[in-house]
Amino acid sequence: MSIPKSWLPAATMARVILHWTGGAHVASTLDRQHYHLIVEGDGNLVRGDLPISANQAPIRGNYAAHTLGCNSGSIGLSLCSMAGATESPFNPGQQPTTAEQWKAGVEIIAELCRTYSIPVTPETVLTHAEVQGNLGIKQRGKWDIARLAFDPAVFGARVVGDRLRREVQAVLDGKRAAPAVLEPAGQPSAPAAKEMELTATVTAPRLNLRRAPDGEIVGSLPRGARLAVLDHDRGWSEVRTPAGHLGFVASQYLTLDA
Image (tube, rainbow, N blue to C red; front, side):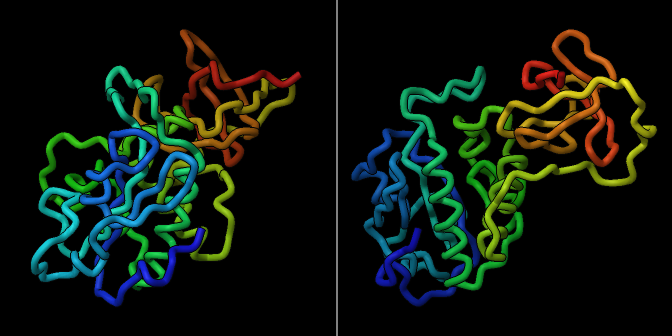
């Protein structure tokens, strides 16, 4: 996706913040008032009422008020979605964020980073849900974007943000953001695989690897990854990853190999 050049005025910008609108798949008048760029449900890109340069620091006059206390120097991009969504228990509502919107958002952010010389870091490319944790600017319980309706195996503000940054950087590097195994840090502690060991294939688009059942997320595994299954109980499987790390995954997202 390419942003029209007239939508990219000369400005010095520090970061890009990704949101969802909390509304329908079509941009509303209110959406246009608050965001510089908006992606509708079918991937169509809409321009906000105010140009990106309106948020250049120091702000003077009208600006796009997309993030509490963090509008100066910030480009606001939003995905039209998640009307009626609830965080816990998670319910994406009747207008969930689509994979097409996410892909478009990644490509748009990459172009913004290239145009405004914004590096891809947790402080400069982030979701609204990360602003309080990454920048220390208190927000009003915002959880956009801490869940991906099209990929429910991926959740948590930092996990989603890290995925966003990986995919944006891949576009900037001229690579497709193909799913990859995200292994935990450090050396694996598992012994070498044994003959006759059970193996299984990941069936979810992205499966979290955890330190313990329902515990801390230490990595992620793409669809099609093959794992050694060491044990399974109460909906959780202890596995060894292709690089030899141990962890736990939800058994429902595995299919035992024949």
